[in-house]
Image 1 (cartoon, helix red, strand yellow):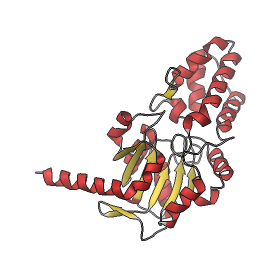
Image 2: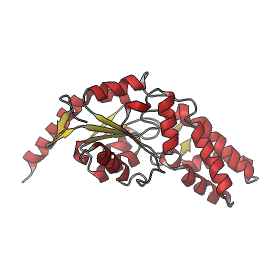
Image 3: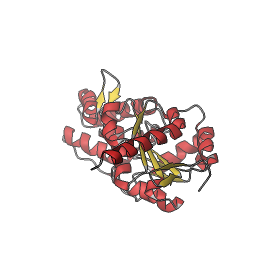
Image 4: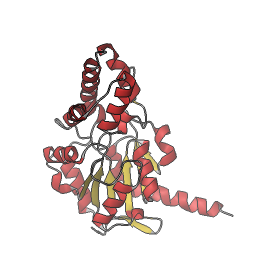
Length: 262
């Protein structure tokens, strides 16, 4: 997908945007707080240790005092299977397929009632498409859940690519999801903007060679935690509308670095 409104960074035009889902396109706490608490309570009860549900949440990266999540924690950016393995080890219990299916169901509940980070996600996507950008979603949720959420928001046909941890492209921070997006949409990595709220999202962009890496600070990671991996860190997704200004700032920084080079 090409268009005259796409931006240029370095020597490559930016023609695609790959978004993380939870915490980036979707309000993380509104979507995930209740399912995470329910999952922890279920597993602790199943293990005969109901008093440890709060401990499991803390182990997964949740800070109850601030309602925030540790950057790169498994509850913030891991898969259901990874969380289940962490918690079952802590409780010293064995789990099988039945437990994995039940755990996955809690994660699916997070998509039951979507809370988009912008008022009309479909319209927001369509504005980017009108400017000539290919759009994709890369999530550590399962692909089915991501597609279901898009359908609920009437935005399923507004994105060109959807990948989850089970889509066969590897896990974040490996570059596979972004490279698969490039393959499908006939893009070079340097033509892609990676947008995410966790260090794993941004590290994936760096590993793949994304042309621009943008962090969204919030409950899963702070400005300070995202800045080392990001070209820019924004306070809200809506600020991405200022992409031309972000581009100009990146160009100035690149030019300054080139001038300082011996």
